[in-house]
Image (cartoon, rainbow, N blue to C red; front, side, top):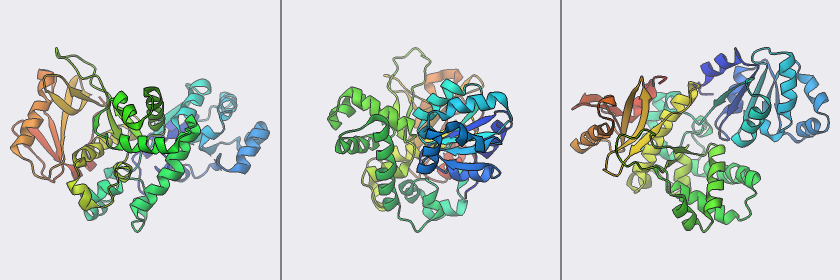
Length: 391
């Protein structure tokens, strides 16, 4: 198992809350992590038909086995669990007593907010971050092969496993199944087309009407399907920064896939050579970088609080976050060589905020790391060691 950066957060929350919950996409390593970290607890998968039937037919008898606590995997499969746990933890608020996991935020979060509010510490575990992979493994792959393979743990724990084979199975058995269960998708072909069109928009402004038109579905359906992809932690929307610096702002969010490997597979990219020349390589690299910032925040138990900036005057920053009342702008370029144009883009990324902007960062697809002309240059591998401030 790879060491996960979420461990200190889980330990902190389990020392203060009677219930700890871990959400995240399928196969991100939730079960492996909690079973290792809470090895003294009984483990129950609510996807096991026998356990689910027992819980549904005799809930009190089912839970009587776990007075000392337990791990309930895929807890959203039994919605009544949350109400019963409320009574149990109100009688005994021993910290870290129960651990819940779930791959659909809809079911898990609705149960938590209705029954366990104030009793549960919430976390999210996304696929591996660069900081969780050994340096030797990253170097052996290189950037394009890493983006193509993605960061689901199994694909790195079993290097002989072909990414295309695993991702095809993942899409069929998890993505399509989970989403169809939540919103009862009738037309699988239309949903598959919608998924591919979303992948083609990773790292780009989201226009729901245009997306719906290309997918031959209504805007209402497109929004519903997007919300479920978000709830299953397959995509996320990066909002524009909310403060107005006297300019007309672009108000649409940007769409990102949580995993570059899944995006590449949906785009039909099957080898690193094709990716190296693909017109969406820059957007896929941006997806990787923004995902690393997202994972850093979530692993620390913090809200993402990440944004981008774009206005109608041509000023833009690929990523923006607040630090001590100032703004940290980040420009992202996929090229391995830092050119004068890259430096100018980094400088430009800070102009919208004036004196409120910190020294801009330029994250690029090479290994150079230095400060040049008022820009901090960061190679993509150095994201492994990047420590983001709380605010």
